[in-house]
Image 1: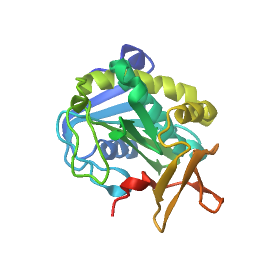
Image 2: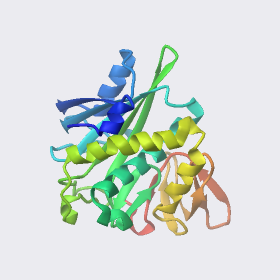
Image 3: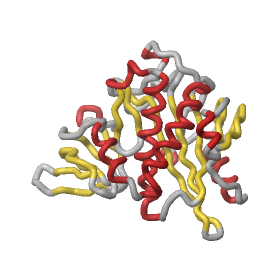
Image 4: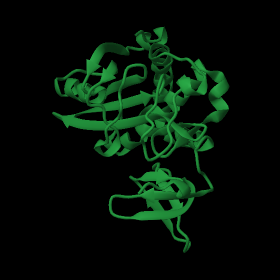
Length: 256
């Protein structure tokens, strides 16, 4: 694997492995050992890949499994915004590698990419503070060659969409688009622009969605993101609810 020359010139580094338990776990372990980012960690396959809320992420060879270690990326209040920054960077990279797909890619709150309505990529942001320094692992999984078919929601790969992009090609593009999006974000000062661009390609805006929270489930209209990146859900009675963490589904595809 190779980074984009402009990413390397900006100080981004790469460690590429054949097999890891989890690229995010490796990134955080290196952060605890005082490694400083920006550092991409990739694996051909993961044996203990995970998604949000500890869910297992299927990690066979052929897809992109990568995590970016960032050190002191932003003040703590802004770290949650990184999922939107990363989503735009991944979208940019896929579109750079396969421009014909641009109109078919949508962003699903808070951290998925959809291709023709099916999940193409997922993002997992994790952070740890060691000795007063915060290390962030921005994990990215993109279905290049294959996708799981036993999920509660539809998934798709680039190959299933008749698009051949190798993990190497995608990381090469992503290493640059991530640098550009992080610069735009400016440690949180530029989140308004990130939010506006994310909303422009958001899936489900203005329509009904079902949101699964840790303690309850809600159905309502997805109105917008607030300035903090929270999903603003208009409930049937008219109340506007701000959702910070949750899983979003189409009302017709709510899993049991």
